[in-house]
Each structure stands twice: as C-alpha cells, then as structure tokens.
Length: 71
Image (tube, rainbow, N blue to C red):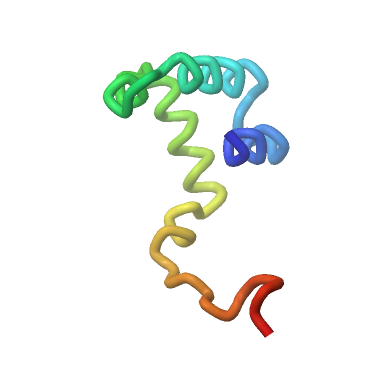
C-alpha cells in the first residue's frame, strides 16, 4: 500500500483511483482476486508505475552494501 500512497502523493493517481484500488486490494484474498481488478484500475496503476519507473527497481540488482547495518 505504500507504493499506492506514494503514487497518490505524486499526483499519479487521483484520490478516487487510490480509494478504489486500495479497496479492491484489501478485499482481495488471493492473487487471482487481485488480478481480477477492473481494467480501468489496472491502467491507472500501470501508468503510475511507468511514471515512477518502477520496472527499473525490479531489474536493478540489490545493493548489498546499502543500509545502516553495513559498514
């Protein structure tokens, strides 16, 4: 849900889209139920994801030396 909140704060989702998506995700008990989200909501999430360049986060290797526990 943090990513959805960030999308809202960056004005990549409207308040109504954020509310609809959040409600759908909270009521979905299985991955299949999430995938059944209405197409207009998927389009909103996909457009916001592209704007945030989220794919780059998933294709970038993890920084193994990052974080407060690494010195």
